[in-house]
Length: 213
Length: 180
Image 1 (tube, one colour):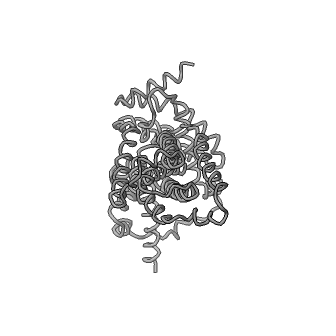
Image 2 (cartoon, chains in turn purple, red):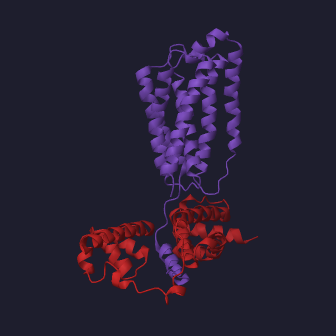
Image 3 (cartoon, chains in turn red, yellow):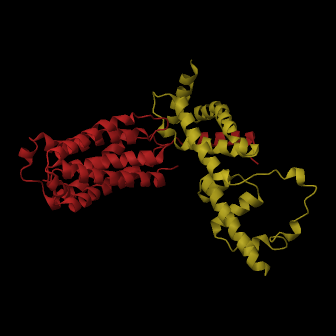
């Protein structure tokens, strides 16, 4: 049976041990960035960047293909990192506006498309390549991110993992958009959205499994 | 309220390598952690509360790098406490504890039927892997704490408890086999 006297000895024992390294979240962010650059570089080296990138980015609806996922990631990554400290309460509602922008883009395009053409426009030509590529780009940074955040102390492992997956999926989608030349929101909101959702799910699962302590 | 600043100052010094400051910090926060455990712990016997308290203290030590200087200490401590206490209760929750002392007069003496009785403990331990045998020897036979016993074989206290549990189950199986 453990007594308060044992606990006092236990405290003395803990205090005699060296202090663990402080949690360095900006370093973690840096390594996630390196892993992302490697994954993205690898995929873009195979697929190439679209030839008309400069002109395409002049078009707001096409630009949104890069900007909206970047916005999501720009919010979700600091949230994932900050929730690695106990008692952090990030303003998660801020993720809603970028998601609403994506929905609005989808709905606007829907109302401008002939009903007969909607199906083919959603399916596009490269849906499978899009899903596979974004997931592939996400793999390395997700592994790196989960490993790095194991040093943290999230009290909501599944949520932290999901936020990390969302951030990395968003970054991967924004990067993949440099290659992808399917510019209809019907296509990219559907498939980029699904790919980001898959990354979020993998992150949540990995968080549940590996971020517990 | 000056108190939180005092906690922050202790933890800051502790994380800079000041051991006595960390000991003082842990002693100062222990009553609050006890209160949380007691509030949640009516379903568990008192003697386990102290074990859970130690699990929380260990977690605070292991994760003290996750406190950011300049942020409040108390919410940080409470968040870790809540997380670890919920975890500890979940792991123990399935077991119903009934104190045996009131029945000790009426219970028949079971020691004659204990499979280990009459067998050479060392002989049985020789069937375990080295680490398991060492843990059984130091924790069960010699009554050492999980921390001390674990440290000898390079395990954390909680891993040592898990390893001990496994070793004991394995011993039970060996006893079952050798009985026949």
